[in-house]
Image 1: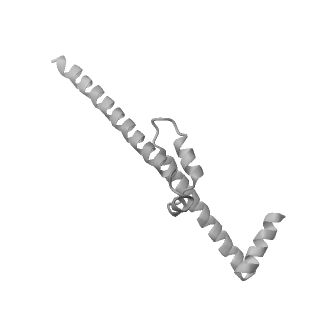
Image 2: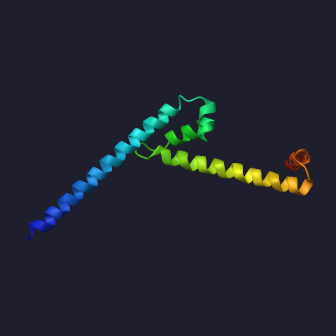
Image 3: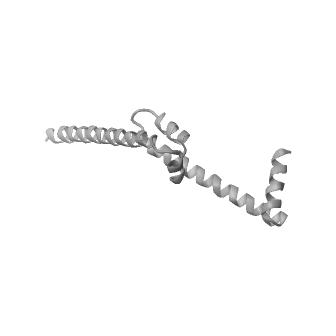
Length: 112
């Protein structure tokens, strides 16, 4: 009867080790894919919502960390910033009256 808990624990340790190896392999493969993306030109990167700086930041994470998680986060942040800028410009247009005047007013506000 005592062998059953020992075997159960051994299988649990083996399963944990296998999961760790699988996660490391996945992170390594994704790191290679991100490294291949450094060969993309700036236009291609912009089409997918990334910059060269985003790729460099993703590749700077520790060896077994997944760089694609950082890329996804940076892409979401960039999208959020673009939405916020568009909303701000719409508010300026509504307040000032037209797009050109809103642009001039925004430029003056930032210069002040």
